[in-house]
Amino acid sequence: MSRHSFDPDIAARVGLNAAVIFQNIIFWIEKNQANRRNFRDGRYWTYNSISAFGELFPYLSEKQIRTALEKLVSAGLIIKGNFSDDRYDRTCWYALGNSICPKGKIDPTKRENDAFAPEGKPSAPEGKSYKNRYKPYKKPKPSRAKAAVEDEVSEKILAAYPEDRVRGKAVCLSQIRQALVDGVDAKNLEEAVRSYATETEGFTRSKVCFSDNWFSSGRWLKYLHEVEQEQETSKVNEREVLKGLADWVTDHHPLCRHITPNQVTALLAANLVSAEQIRKVGLQ
Image (cartoon, rainbow, N blue to C red; front, top):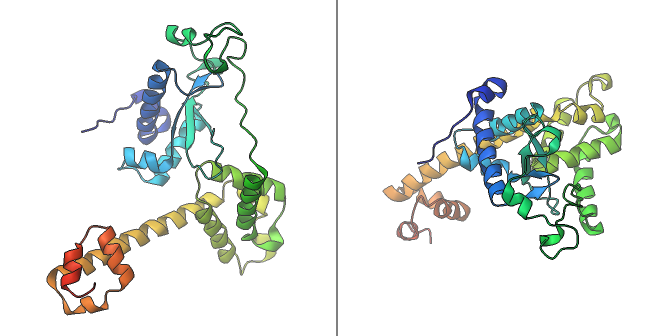
């Protein structure tokens, strides 16, 4: 049984949820430092996606996890990065912030010093040396094909915004790309933009926010959270429907004949019934 702990002083600063997640981040950063792994830009990093954090902390919603991480970043307790070449990789990297690591550098351990040798010496692994030890990590430029896909996705999202209120296109696309890098689902963000467009469809032009302000000020988060909540509600309702159908199958209810092939597939995937039970009611 796993136990989650937190620092009371940290909890007083950023709240209990953020303090618990911060303790987990510290644990993995310390472990990576001990094993000399994930050392970039003078810091040790750990990584996780929002969904992965959700599995570690099942009592927190994705919204609560995202809010907790934002609080930790705002408080300077952690910094966030992305070191993947894959545009659709939602995994974010986290390191201790400047309030924990002054000047962006941590105190090196003796083992870590062993990993850095004078320039040109064969004992310097993977090109590591005192000379290039704190050089900033340069993310490889994406291929033209990958960049084109990224632009297409961002353009599609922006196209959902009320056309006559689009302004500062470059700023909007930059904000959209950053949101996707931070782990926001592209389809959900597009749906959030469409939701705002639908909500303001009958408004006078002056009451509809310019797109650059809308994205930069984070007003899209409200609509994104609503989309995610609707999805979660839909999932709950779907699970309840499947449970009801499973009861029909178990009880050999006459209404089993109305169960569709797609519902049969969903029932089996959810392990609510067995293939043998499906066969006995004549659905296969």
